[in-house]
Image 1 (cartoon, rainbow over the protein chains, first blue to last red):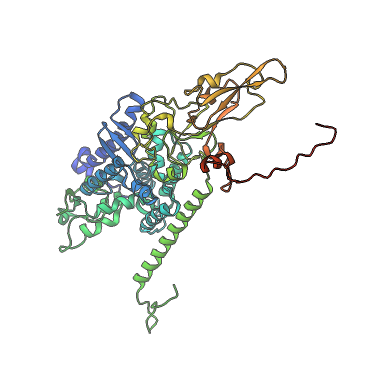
Image 2: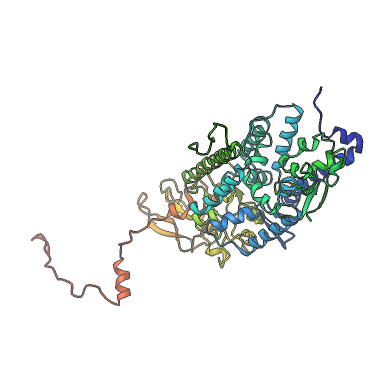
Length: 280
Length: 257
C-alpha cells in the first residue's frame, strides 16, 4: 500500500482553494511581515522600522518581543517606556489570537521547519528518535535565569529564531549555518525538533496560548473517519487528541497553548471537522 | 534515580508511566542545563568589543548596554548615512548589537541624533543632551612615526575633518628637531571634547590611519586610586598641605657658584 499523502483527499473533496486556504493565508502573512520590514530600507517606504525584536509602525505603534523585553528587565535594565508599551501590546494581541500564532503566522523560522516537515513526509522518512518536548520549557527557564546571572541578554547571542529574523532584514553572516542546522535537525534527527521540542521562544509564546481567546475547535468530531491527516500535518500533534478523541465529555476545543492556530488541520480534513472559534 | 518505588513485592513494575515521566523530565532538564551552561560560558569567553567597532552615540557603558539592547535595529534604520550595522553571527561583536567602523563610515554627528531617538529600550541613553556630549570612543594619534604632521608636513587632515575643530583636536606647536628651523604642528586630541565620531580616522590620508578611535576603556590610562595630585589637593585645602617646609642646605661641587 502506498503511503497516504495528507491533504490529498481534502483537495479531491473540497477543491484546492478550501484545502489550502489557511496555509496560503499563513504564507502570505509571513512574507508580508518581512516585506513590511524591508520596504523602508529597499524602497524608502517607511511603514515599519526595526525587526521582530522591536519595531515602530507608522511612527506611533511600538511592538516589542515580550521575551526579549523580559530578558532585558531580568538583566537589570530599566527598560524604556516605548519598549514596555510595545511588549504589552504584543502580549495582549497574542492573548487574543493564540500565543503560538506568532510561530505559525509571523516567525520566518516556520518556513524552514515547515519545509523540513514537508520534505520529511514526502521522503517518508521513518519516525525519528523520541525526544521530550518539555525541554523547551526548561530551556526557557534557564535562559531567563542566565539574564540576571550575566547581566546581559545572553540568549540573543545565539537565538536561532532572531538570528534568522534579523538576518533576513540586516544581513545574516554565518547565521545560515544555524538555519541549515535547524533544517537538518528537523529533517533527519527529530521530526518537528526545533519548533516542536526545543525552541524556548515558542515555549514562551505558548504561555498566553493556554488562555487565549481564538482556538481551533473539533466542532464536527462525530464526522471524523480517523484518516489521521490532521495528525500528520500538525506541528504539535499531541494537542489534537484531547479535543478530537477525548470522548463526549471532553471539550472539542483544542485547549493546549502549544496549538499554533496554523489552521492546517482545518485545511486537510476531508470531513471539515475543525474550525476556528473562540475558546468558550 | 535510585530505584525507589520501582517494583512492588511481586517484582512487577509499579508505576512505569510515572517512572518514565520522571526519567524524561530529568533528561529534558539535564539537556537544557547543558545547552544553557554552554551558552553562559560562550558569553563569558566572548570578551569585550573589538577595538575597530564603536557603539552609536549615547550608548550605555558596554556591560549595561549588553543587558539593555534589544537587538531590534531601529537605530540602524534611523541613521541617514547608513553608518550602523547589526553584528551578524560569526563577527567578534555580540550578535545583533549595533556598531560602526569609523575607518569605513564614521558617525556624522546629526544634531537631532535620529539613531538615539529610534531606540525603544534606552540602550542609547535619552539623557544625552547634545550629540557633542556623546563618547563613542576616543581618538588617539597612535603612530607618531608615520603621521605626516609628525614628519613635519602640514597635512592637518584629521584636524580639519574634526567636527569639533580646535576643541577636540588642536595643533600644538613644537620645534622640528630634524631640520632645526621648521615647526611641527602636532595634532593633539582632548578627551573632554572628543566624541569618538571617527571623522579623523576616516579622513586620515595614510593607507592605515595613524589616528584611530578606540573604546574609552582601551584609549585611556587610569591613575591608581591612591594617587593624589599635589596641586589639586593644595587648591582644595586652600593652601599647602605641609605646614612647614624644611629648608635643606644646597650642596654643589665647590667650583660652581
